[in-house]
Each structure stands twice: as C-alpha cells, then as structure tokens.
Length: 389
Image (tube, rainbow, N blue to C red):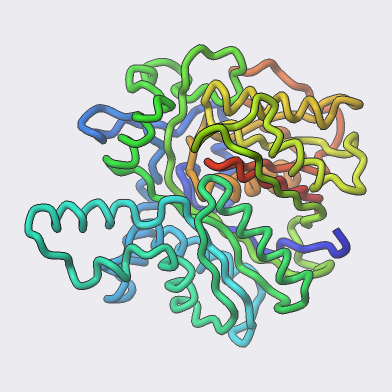
C-alpha cells in the first residue's frame, strides 16, 4: 500500500457492550454472550445486545419521529456512527464519505411487512423505503447532516471489510480525505434463523447448557455450531499519519474463488490465501503477531481458513490465532468490523485474547501488527492488515 490510512475513531454496539471499557472487560473474561430466545418456533441460542445497549437504541428511535419506523439494523448503525463522529475530532464542516453495509439489511421489518401483506393483501406505505438496502448509509447521512458520498452494499459476511476497502480506495484516490465505514446487522429473526437451520450450520439449542454453544476455532468438532449475533461497528478513516490515530491500515487484500455451489469454499480456502497474500505485500510474514480469523463455528469454514493460513505462513511460525465468534456469535455483515475492534483493543492493551477451549497460545512479543479475515457466501474474502499507532 502506498499510503497509510489512519483509523482515528471507532465505535460499536454489540453483545459485548457499547463503550471501550466494558467491551475490553468482557473480552478479558472467558464467558460467552449467548442466551436462548424463542425463534423459528423453537428455543434458539443467540447473542443479543445488552439491556443497556437496547435502551440506547430506543433513545435513538425516539429522538426523531421519522426513526420510529426504522429497522434495528439502521438504528444500531446510527448509535455507533454518532459516537464515532463525536470521538473523531471532525468538525461540523467536515466533508466525509459514508459506507455502512449489511448482509441482510432490514430483516425484521421485511418479515413483518411481508406477513402483513400475506394476511391483508396490502402493503404499508413505508414498506419499501424502510427495507431497501441503501437504507443504512442514507439515514446516517441524514442523521449526521453529512455532505459527502454515501454507499451501501451487501457482500454477505465480508460486507463491513468491503466497506473498509471502499474507504481506503476513495482516500488513496484523493477523492475525499475522510470516510466513515462499517457494518450493521440485526439478524435475530424467525426467517433468518430458519434459513441457517436449513443450511444445517446452526448450533443446537441444547448446547446452551454446555459451556460452549459455538465452537469457533475448534478444528476437531464433529458438528456445525454457528450462532447468530447482532450489532454494529464503524470507524473513521483518514489519509496519512494522524496525531490522534488509534491504528493504521497498512495492507488490504481481496479475492473471490470459483464456486462449486452457492455457499461453497475450497478445501484450502483459495480466496483467503489470495487475500492474505495481497494484504501482506511488502510485509515480512514474521512481523504479523496475531490473526483474527473469520472462523464462524462451522466444520468446513473453520478448517479451510486454518489450512489457508498454514499455506501463507508455511515458511515461518504461525502468528497467534483467535476469533470472537465463540463469544458474540456471527454478526454476518458486521462481523469483520467487530473483528477489527478486537484487533485494535489487543494492540492498545498489548494483550492477546485467545479462544478458551482451544490449545493455549503464548504471547511472546508485543502485539504491533494484526491481520483480520472475513469471507462471505460466494467466496468473497477480504484481509486487512492493521498496525499499532
């Protein structure tokens, strides 16, 4: 990469909390954030927002009469974006781009509107504008009164890291000098859960009684254990070195691979090999201290990514490996940016957060560079290399 990109502010709302202190404290304990909800007509393990965070979301919903009709995916993103901008140092005249994506978008609202249509034969007036994919970035632009470009997209589970890629590209092209990027997801709905069960990748409800309902990064598991979580996270990007930088993006990589079917990934995750190799261009692999894996908790998803990492780091000792999905579940389009948050916190506190049921890994040196992976249906992989500020 020919220009450092500074991350000057970060904010999130997730099952871990809504402020850096609580989020870090939750990372330091070995407790997962899963509870059981009645979804898809049965008990279902999920990772929901904390009561405190839900209250903040409701405050935003009630802050503007127009927000009462918005989906949680939009409101989550509004909460995170307001806080990030407040911490960024950007003044009211700042011109910045916005790219906040989502894998599923307004799932809850869409299901409710469609059910009402089936029952009455009529659609609500606001059914279309409140369920379109461009909903999130548009409402954030309205809320923040921004004047820069706004982009929305869905690239399944790599959505948020693709948003980060877009921000980097615009900044490097000098088309803007500031960009707000991230992802938001509110997938804890009946039909979304039913879809995951139909794919036979969702964790069983009875596993909630066990210690670990989601066995992300357990490479020896004999069943799929993916659990869904909700949340949003965003970061403020600026070109060049900045005094208030909390981390730097020093490498980006992306790739797709030829599919055998709609959700396939190759045995050694060719797409991840390509994206990691691109992100590491000009960087000695030995300098990478940690990799935050995508590792969704499925048998094939976890193992193929691990094999790809082994291929890329074949000539050196593997970096420390971790994931946060055993703790907060898979937040689909927001998952990559929540992994970025984990990476930043580990660098700031110089403390590796491992997976408690995985083989112990010893931190032997300061954490200065962290690689983050994300991949979605369709083999769309993204890798982002961060460096400590």
